[in-house]
Image 1 (cartoon, rainbow, N blue to C red):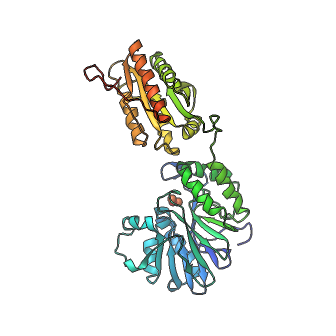
Image 2: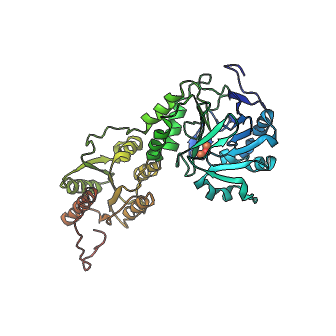
Image 3: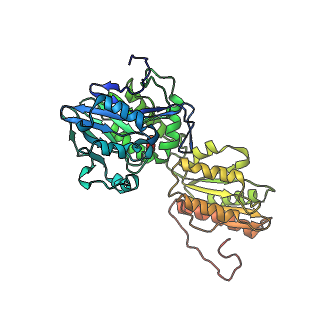
Amino acid sequence: MSRAGAVLPGEPVAIAPDVFWVGALDPDLRQFDIILRTANGTSYNAYAVRGSEGVAVIDTVKAEFAEDFFARLWSCCRPDEIRAIVLNHLEPDHTGALPALLKAAPQASLYLSYPALKMLKGLVKESLDEARIIPVDEDTRIDLGGRTLRFLHTPYLHWPDTQCTWVEEEGLLFSGDVFGCHFCDSRLFNDCVGDFRFSFDYYYQHIMRPFREHVLTALDLIEPLPLRLLAPAHGPILRDAPTSYVRRYRQLAAPLLANEAGGREKTLLVFYISAYGNTERMAQAVRNGAEGVEGVRVSMYDLAGGDPGPFVDLIEEADGLVFGSPTINGDAVKPVWDLLSSLTLVKVKGKFGGAFGSYGWSGEAVGLVEDRLRGLKLRVPRPGVKVKLIPTDDELESCAALGRELAEHLVGRVAPRHIDFTAPNALTA
Ligand code: FEO
């Protein structure tokens, strides 16, 4: 293939000496995994590495594209030459051709991470000789003869079993989904394809961002490598300035918003939306209660005046979240759900959360929001406050107590609760 040429059907593409791309192109895909939009389709990148002692296959392709994969693979090796099949993670878009490959190369061993062992049975339904399955870790070496494969433990990028495979002689990292993107261009290499920067960032934001802490840990492993070529599982092969993509991940994983509290204070965000001003008054009381706790910076936002995107960026950095919603037709209102449904993009597990709201008839919103917060693995340390229509002074004091108690949790000073079980609404106010 020329520098700017296109991949041809059935032809493998050399990406380094004796290292070949044997993947498949899927230019017509417009939605991946239901959640990702793919204006340019995608590619399923699989690779073959030839050493003097045999061949390793790194990942496979989605099942529908197995024919393309095998046509390319058998153009660069015979089935009986394959010694190793390496899976960087087990998601079906990279393991669809695995069962057929295992059959075609019965002498080959299957190398995968320890967490992947538990998933393998769900993937390969036919019985598999256990002697063929070899879990690997950072100390494992596969010597193909002049080509040595090593492994980087990079869990949750973006599956629990994710690892990257390093070819030390070539400075080549088979990075799985890491540094990948959904961008199909048959010119294949980053210095030949169209501008894919938006796809690269979009992929990070939707696939990697929820696991930011794991990204940072993985970058600590990857940055010291003498990297000359990055070969991800989707999108362009990054041969021109590969380390710039590593640096871009470092930038993307940095906080999007500078935290003016500078880590000296805990941050509590109060989000609300109000139909008649009642939930708004409750929000103000929650804020006032929280502001009385030293070491907590409180911010309040009306969801009627903002989009979820910037709020999600704020939430990623915050320590605590409180949501105020009226109940309309037995539910919290759409702007609240829009924001809550966006929180799968960031890590919120372990933050403190709470809810409050005014209602006319039944007041389900508070409980539903609390359930959602718990579902997102937030800690909801006390029941929220729901108020029928206009809040009384006592009810506003309950809101202030909610804010105060959440703030005390944030700074680790939790006042003991005194509950009068004879009082009406003892556990809801
Ligand atoms: Fe491209 Fe996580 O599969």
